[in-house]
Amino acid sequence: MNQEIIQRYINEFRRYISSVLKPNIGLEIDIYNCGNEGAVLIIFFKPGGKSIDKEINEFNTIADVLNSIEQNFVGGNISGMTFKGTNMMMDQNRILLIKESNKDEWSSTQLKEDLNNIFQPPSKKKKV
Image 1 (cartoon, rainbow, N blue to C red):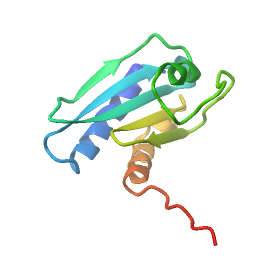
Image 2 (cartoon, helix red, strand yellow; image 1 turned 90 degrees about the horizontal axis):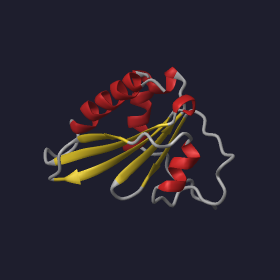
Image 3 (cartoon, helix red, strand yellow; image 1 turned 120 degrees about the horizontal axis):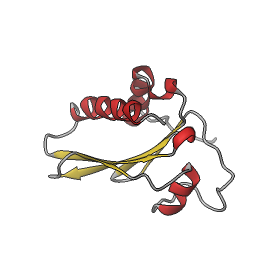
């Protein structure tokens, strides 16, 4: 995955989301570039912290990344899993984005859709 494309997406993401956050909230973004598969971005909200990007390059696949980080989103044997499009998972202090390498997934249009999903997540349908 082209690192410049990832960085452009992150810079735009930070610019848009910072405009709605309190001024003292930093964004720490861990970048796991998985080559042709895409990338995993973990966005941490850090009250009183600095905004920094950390490139973590020792992983070749998205499954390797998910197996190595603390997460409760995907379990079991995920070595054969593939991820298409943009997959987003959120918990209290972070957002996990899994994006395939397709350039459309890293575009400004997709960024706006990703931000819309963060700020207006799909509502759960009530079962009757």
